[in-house]
Amino acid sequence: MKKLIVLSGAGMSAESGIKTFRDSDGLWEEYKVTDVATPDGWRRDPALVLDFYNQRRRQLLNSKPNAGHYALAELEKYFEVQIITQNIDNLHERAGSTKVVHLHGELMKVRSTGPGEEVFDVDPKHPDVNLGDKCPKGYQLRPHIVWFGEAVPEIQRAEHMTYEADIFLIIGTSLVVYPAAGLIHNVKAGVPVYLIDPKEVNAISLNVTFIQKGASEGMKEFKRLLSLD
Picture 1 (cartoon, rainbow, N blue to C red):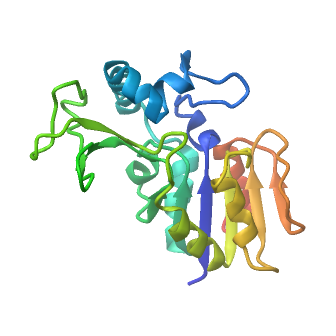
Picture 2: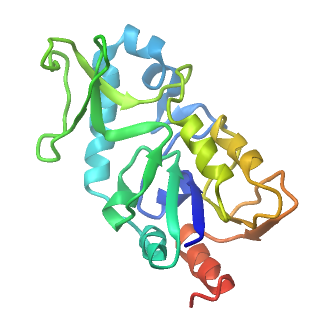
């Protein structure tokens, strides 16, 4: 089976009602990104940060995968599909995708602030995490999110996956947030690249087929181009 490697961003989940940070205004759901998505923000006011992600978690639990997510999952019948996502939601998995790498962490997980930084699943029935909630070793739990200024642990794995691609598909990302934006440079010469986004995206590749549509309609067009519909 050919390897279809997918890089998904905020536009992938936009049709599901998931709002995300935008560089242009420095706000995320009306919060300053420096207050809720940086190590300094955590040190200043951990209660605010926990509450922010509690709100995001509740929003996610009330959201559903869209047709674009389901279309990607269905492609596992034809390809070895591996998804690299910048999104912290679990909508790819809920739609049925089986191989998903989260570059920026996962909203439905928390991790210990102690040595080892063990990661734990959040119970969907009790999704809030508060000050005083600790890991079994007695350390405060924090969101399992890669904040600005922190290393991206999965980036090397993502680079290797991209290098192995037979087809590279980009959905809903402006290719301006690094290191994820740099993954396109790991695609081998001659490998077809498809980019789905309703807005114009400045992709540095001579082999890009642009599909200027949202995720759901864009996936329909992608399948048509590959003669799968």
